[in-house]
Image: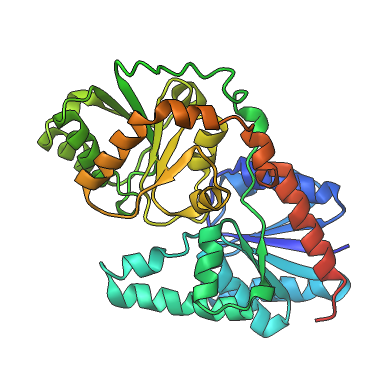
Length: 372
């Protein structure tokens, strides 16, 4: 059986990753982890488990050569494959491959068009990182595509399709309230309850969402807009809501453990991100039975390709036009709800957490039997 070596660049605990490690181990895939962000709560927790090897790698040449020595030692006795979680880990994995010939798989966490969008703000820095991405795409044995957006971007960059494996991020549907059963939908629209779940950062375009909500309110609609999430743009966005005169209609909820209690009371889910590797919040809203208005990003593209009647999209940056689209959806809400009759747990079965993990397990077992 293979040895899967995760490379991560974050110190905090991550239930998604920790559960993965336990699952892969149960499938007979040996587990190890390199943390290139320093020792933190995650490594401290994993050190207590017998079935995983942990290594905290200091950035710099000394740390790199320690990782190199360790990986060479492991690969002498086991079929070793690196699983790189994101951009920096993929750069690290490429460097290790060049010197050890150990193959690596990219777990595609970073939003695919982020560097292209960031180039509008920092051209040379963005181009440098985009060049690095192109190089490690060439060096990777496989690239896990979480969503249709990732797949489309990889194809645009002329990555061979044979390298791309379309396996979604994976979401635990058991944590989602039963479809529609717990959803009290107010068709009277005495107040339109709109929700977004998002990091408060420039690429998520919550500023555009506030402008859209302002247009709706100014046209006479009674709207309450709840934003779940934190981030560097909080003060800027709060000030924008005041400037637009809608501060009484906007709730900045911050971090919230139980997002489903908010989603099941809402009328619409609103997502405006420029790019997403997946967009778990979109799937959470869909599993909760909410109609969705989204930009063309992440898993929303998969939903649109599946002709999901719950998901609608906009492809412009004009708040007036987007507000008009919203109004059109409100006018057809009964027809939309009547079409949302298929259980999304069945519709998106391949996005279920353990279905996805099983696909990743099969991938690594298959690669371990292939000649390099």
